[in-house]
Image 1: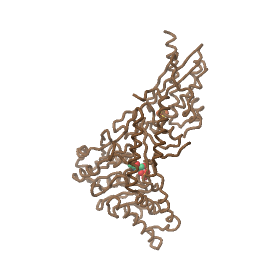
Image 2 (image 1 turned 90 degrees about the vertical axis):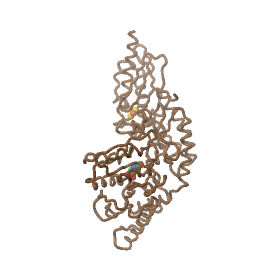
Image 3 (image 1 turned 60 degrees about the vertical axis):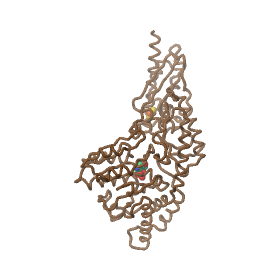
Image 4 (image 1 turned 90 degrees about the horizontal axis):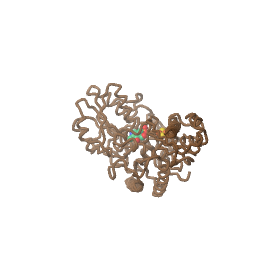
Amino acid sequence: MYSKETIKRFSDPQFVGEIEDADGVGEVGNMKCGDVMKMFIKVKDDVITDIKFKTYGCMAAIAASDMMCELAKGKKIDDALKITAKEITKDLGDLPPVKFHCSILGTHALKKAVEDYKSKQKA
Amino acid sequence: MGVDIYLDNGGTTKVDERVVKAMLPFFTEQYGNASSTHARGYDAQKVLNKSRDTIAKSINALDEEIIFTSGGTESNNFILKGIAFTNKKKGNHIITTKVEHKCIMNTCAWLETQGFIITYLDVNKEGFIDPQQLEEAITNKTILVSIIHGNNETGSINDLEALGAVCKKHNVYFHTDACQSYTKTPLDVKKQHIDLMTINAHKINGPKGVGAAFIRKGINITPLLHGGDQEFKKRAGTENIPGIVGFAKAVDIASEKNVKQMTILRDKLIEGLLTIQGTKLNGPLGERRLCNNVSVSFKAIEGEAITGMLDLKGIAASTGSACSAKTLEPSYVLMAMGLTHEEANGTVRLTISKDTTEKDVTIFLKEIKLVVDKLRAISPFKGDA
Ligand SMILES: Cc1ncc(COP(=O)(O)O)c(C=O)c1O
Ligand code: FES
């Protein structure tokens, strides 16, 4: 049912964890099935220098969280915000259609983390 | 994949070698049609009768009260639709529960579109139907009560004798879906006041696609399948002789000893699982739980991820989580038992069989601990509170 890449990311995610002195933290929940993702970012000169996640959800949600982090790391904030759920799904080697919503979660969590970062910058 | 441990026997079971052996001659040698009037036909008729007798005796029924079908789904459809349409003039009210198998739920939903009124009884925290609540739900329009015996998700075994007595008192037909409990929990249609019952073969190490409906003698029921005169004119179609022979063989093989062994392993599993922080058993403990069923909820982690990680290790289990359902809704059975969304989503069901070994249980308990630790390290929630 799941691709090799999804299984690999799910069994051995590289970006799990929390960043204690994160510059931005975003948490989103999905009303569909109750999954929750928390994302932590470090930012320097507008570039995401470090990123970590914690996810409560299915195999696809965990794999998609990890993929999201990999795609966003090292990118300029504005470019990272352009990452779409479609890209995540494609890089995972496709997901069953019913699981597409799990990959949207990652993009929303990043957006929230960036908002958090920006609001802290203003303060 | 390190191991091969199958803990999804509530889904289906491995066909026992002895069952396969008993079935084989009926494909290539004794392949007669039981309706034919020649030697091969008579042979088929003979073995059909013998198999029917085995099934009948196992539930204290008469031979002519057993109708072979294509399985649990067909028997449930046949009984519910058949009784509903045959008794339309008497009333249009049917009582069932919120924790039935999908094939009862969706048959009832269809009957609603045909003008029948369905009452869905609640269950308590352990998954049981209260006989008093049943009694209160019965009206003078009630024609049928259908209540699951052993629950496929939570293992709760309803007290058929008490529920049947209520139906008898009010003179309404009592049906039970006993697919999960058959050969594992005593079934006696007389003692338990059962008028109609559903059983199947593939949950008891028999073949898929064969089952039976028990229809008490004297009950009028319109067939679901119209055609030839097979099965006392209650179910048309050439009988699946190999399947029926396999079904009867599986019943022969089932034993008290197997039930005892499963009960011991079940309790070992429960005990081991409850030593893990943040776990909760769903359904009852002891005699009122199916001997092969364990259902636990893990805090802070999601069931599809748990069973997915177990699967990667070679361990098969199932879950009631929303993420595993096409509808993205958690199990309605668990919700009816009062679990929270989070508890239902963190539920894993383990169902053992007579072939499950103590070693399987030991390995499983070791592996599940690793899986739970790993997924809790990924989860933003705390699992040990
Ligand atoms: C309680 C219950 N009823 C009915 C069924 C359906 O039986 P079958 O698969 O033989 O159609 C099952 C199992 O799938 C079951 O567990
Ligand atoms: S997290 Fe529920 S379906 Fe993916």
